[in-house]
Image (tube, rainbow, N blue to C red; front, side, top):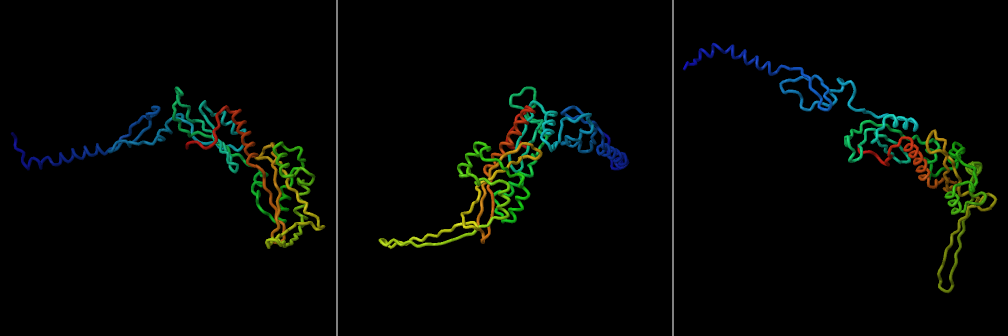
Length: 320
């Protein structure tokens, strides 16, 4: 057995250190290697260092090395319904779907092209990424927005006159007999089938500019001599300048489109109201079932989309 002396080890110190440094350099050296994407086999170069390749390489790292992306992504925003329908027909699949938001202040449609197919569908991945979409926000007409904004809002005479001056072209002069059956029934229930009960455009303008009311009030006392009970009665009446009862129309109607650029007009009935505040008249109107008017226009648009695209339409919002 050969004795190892301190001197012999010292003589090889340089050789041992050189070998150690070489090994360390090999260990720390960064190598460039191609790594295949397990989804489609696409290869991209990655740097392999002392800790190896990162265990969670982002999926997008291979994208620039592919001739085509793995799937379509992004959302197209359309401003007209025919364009939305055309885009849907261009990119739809058998399992594509459309979601509809029926909020009458912000109605919209969203088409999801890579939507999940039905359970049990063979040959199709049941979990789709849902990253390729098209959206359409229904533009509400200026007429609809104006009348909805002032609904049930009390206005002084000058404000009411200014509002009518801007929107008087929306007020209809059609007789009650030309209204729909539900609207005629509503007019009858409000005793607004006689002449003057439904305001014409001219009558509304005259009211807002020339309406004058005089309020008379009186009280009387009645005493029951048998029981000693006393009954007080207070009577308040509104009269015109000539002393006659106030001739104030109960209803008027407007014909407006719900959506911008639409040629389809819808009739909406409005109750006309007034009160005296500090001796001055205050006006407002109450639209009758305007929510049904919106629902009718919206459902007609959905029927058109369903017919021309052949896709199912769900009311609500998608999963993500």
